[in-house]
Image (tube, rainbow, N blue to C red; front, side, top):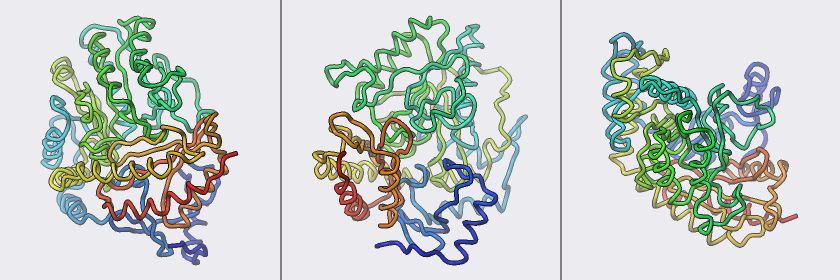
Length: 454
C-alpha cells in the first residue's frame, strides 16, 4: 500500500498557497506543508492525490468515532438550518444547548452535574482555573496556587502555558505565571526520583502532600493533571496514583481538576479515563472528542460543592460561542453514539489486543524501552530509544525518518519530536476493528523492528 510520491498541479497549488499565507500549527514558520487532506471514511483519511492513510492519531485524539458518521453530520445540518448561533447570556439559551447539557451530565462521573461550555480545550482549562479562584474567593480564602505535573499539557495560552510542562518546545517558553508549581510526573520508565515501581510506594503521588506542606496549605487552590499524559506521549499512571491524589486533595481541602480533553469520551476504554479508577474529580475539563471532532466545542463540569459556593454570584465566565447550538447538537449526537454503540467497550477490547501484540513482538527489541509499552483502551504509547541501558532517545532525524516511512506505507502516525524522549503513540479512532488494528500493526511493527541501536 505504498503512497504515490508525485503530486498534481492542484495539490502543489494548495501547498504553495498555504506556505504563502497560513501560519502552520506545530511546525517551523515558513515551512511548506507536505500533505493536504481532503476527505475520508471510518478510520481512513484521504489526501488530494487520492492516497488513503490510517489515522493512528485520530487527528489529535478528536475523531473517536471516525469519519463519515452521517448521523452526526445530519444533527449539525439540522441545527444550523434552524438556529446556527445563540448568544447564551443574560437568561438567553436554546434547546440544543440544554439538551447537550442533559446528555453530558448523564455520561460524566456521578456528581458532576453542572456544565459550562467553551470553544475548546485551552478555554476549558482557563475556565477551570477561573472557577477554582472564584470558589475559594466565595469562601473568603486566598488560595491561588495551582499545582500541575512536569510533562503535562493543558492547551496553549498564557495561564495554560504556566501549568504546562510538556515535552515539546520548552526552550521557547517564557517564565511561568505566579502561583503555578510543577511536581514530578508519573512516567515510571523515566522516574524523576530514580525509583522503581512498586518498591517506590508511588512516591510521585505522595510527593504532592509534601509540596502542599512546603507551599503552605492555605495558599494552594488546586491540583490539575491529565489521567494520562497526552502531549508527552500517552504515558499512563499506575493504578494507585489517582486514588492517592484524590485523598491528598481531600485531606488538604484543595480541588482536583481532571484534564480529560484528550482522554475523555471512550479513548481510555471508559467514557472518561478517571472511571478506570473510580475517582471523582471536583472539575473535569473536556473538548476534542466531545463532538467526535466534527465541531469545535469544549467545556467543564463541576460538582455540587463548587456549585453551592458559587450560587447567587454573578457568572461572568463568558465566551461568544459558549454553548454554540450547532456544536451542542453535534456533541449530543456523538454522545448518543458513544453510549448506544458501546464504543468504550470496543476501545477497551481492541486496545488490549494492540497492547498485547506490541508487548509480545517488541518488548525485547533493543530500541524499545523495557517496560515502557503502556496503554488504556485506545491510548497506547512506548519509548523508542537509541540505547536501552541509558534510555537515550532517538535523534530528531531518526524520529522524523520513522514518521516518513510510516506515511509512505499509509499510516498517519505520531512520534514525539520534542526534547528529552522519543515516544511513539497509537491512538486510532475508538471504533477501530480488530482487523483494522492488525492491519496497522502489520505495517508498524516491521518498521520499528528495523530500527538499529547506536
